[in-house]
Image (cartoon, rainbow, N blue to C red; front, side):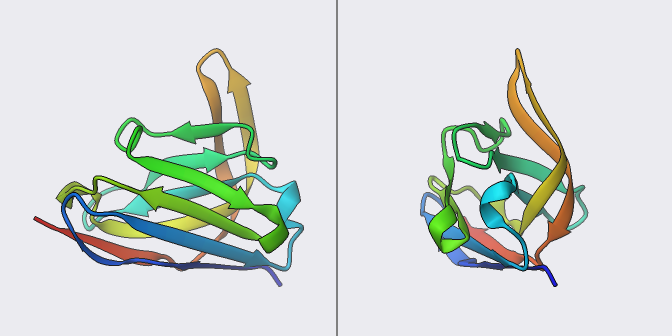
Length: 128
């Protein structure tokens, strides 16, 4: 049984930092690309970052580019999202996803979507 579990969310002031973690079991972690999504109340889910199996390729949404950094430690079966310069508009439930049905490398860079496995999310709240 696959389990994906996020942690590290919380309340932080604008301009602050947080690091989210995601662990996954029941799958071969190093064989799968991974991603972070977020969803704010009343808004659609947004894919904010994706990382390839080895970590050699990454994708960031424009909304987080330059402020968030995704990384993974395959030996620890853990995915990370370091979030800096946080803004109130970053307030959302953050989700980890594993096992995209599609990964794309093209002229625009790397991206991935349509994930098989999802965590329950961790709340991030940024106060102004």
